[in-house]
Image 1 (cartoon, rainbow over the protein chains, first blue to last red):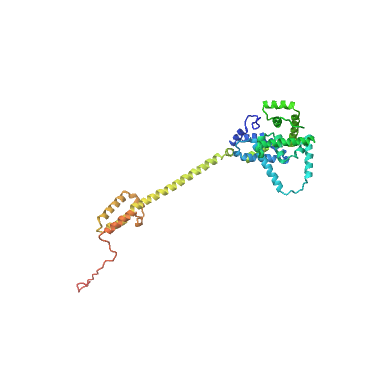
Image 2 (cartoon, each protein chain N blue to C red):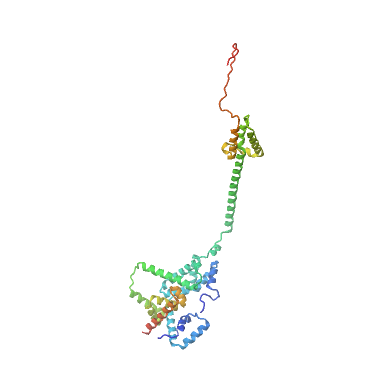
Length: 184
Length: 212
């Protein structure tokens, strides 16, 4: 397996973190450049395309504020995903508590989502999207992390809070369900 | 679409898609996919899923995010070096601190010196007035005379301090001095009377030869 935490200059994320903690701002810029796009994809893959910039920014701010708590047990990117996932969940919970000013029917949202998917992703990808919406939340999350982000089962297990074996089972069940939907 | 029985190869397909395999493993997986219809179909499916999941997500402004992150989370060392105190202001602050410290030391030290000097003078000069009274009485005991002699010698040894003394009182005596003094007083044969002495008025009248 290749190491996603090592850039083209050969410096690891831990090296960059150490440089940042010594006051080198270029190290911070390098860390952001290295992981921002992955975080954006991560947010987008969970349906937060319109708040990607905010989420990525907030994730980095939170991460840099608590770098002392990062011990390097997992990769820096997985740690960032964990933070972003929590932010995303917090926002979703806050949105649920907040009374919406416009009542949106479930069917409307689904139709709008489908149309957008078809426009941006093409017909085949749109079918995959439809199939994914039939997955259980855990299956969808594991499938997204594995396919969209390329995370290992171990990283997914850390992120989602499950075991490596359970993550593998969820992924293969999700793949089977998507295949069956496409074959129908 | 059926599942390939080689679970290990299927597990590696997302890693192949994301180029997360080392060279040797990648060669093995690619060789398998080329010969396996099921894995080729599954790889195509997860590629479409990947496109669907990440498409439409525009690139984020890395520079802007970096700026905000650095502004809001400066490393402690960086903030210390980035915002140094101006040299002149730092020097001025140090000067004031040094001057204030010297002033406090001078005032405090001077006060302590004066208090100690004052206390020493009290100790050396409290006895003489009392002792002088004792000495003034004839018939004082030999012990009192010795006591006076000791204090006189002490007073003579520190003539400058007596000038600072405002006079001694009994309350200024130490306990041992008081005991010694009381002992001496008890031993005295004669105590000066506080009663007025009888006065005899002699009036001389011419012719009578005088009368009392």
